[in-house]
Image 1 (spheres, one colour):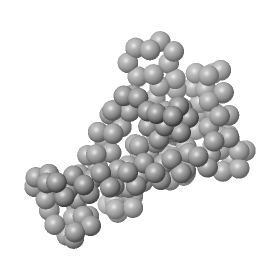
Image 2 (cartoon, rainbow, N blue to C red):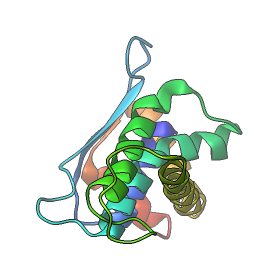
Image 3 (cartoon, helix red, strand yellow):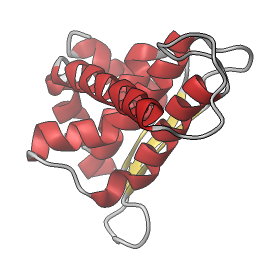
Image 4 (cartoon, rainbow, N blue to C red):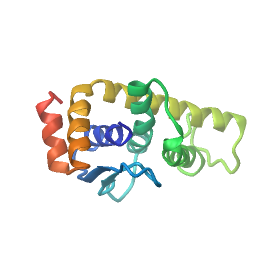
Length: 163
């Protein structure tokens, strides 16, 4: 469900971003699955855009928590990516809740702000996923049978499930 969590949150928050392929691997060496998408576009990003990217990063562990009751260490790189985006928001982009400040070093206050951004995005991702359970279960069944799903197939599954 990890990969499907990423895919559904990406499709909901970035509907014009094609997902090239969603795959799973039964071998167990390295990544157990992968979601490949074209990216979120170039150019300036607002705080809302960056938080959406964090939601997509957090979606795998959010799906694991919803479907398995806990998450494992498979989302480590996702969490690192989300943390780096949140840190950049408050350290380089002046998107801190305390105002337009560039922060050079992580302080307790900046760590708390990063944690708050991550928690809020994690909850947003869980909310999106929980609203699309039928689609995720249908996509899971297709993914287990085929080992991969294209953007078109995944979009049809989302649309046919009421999304």
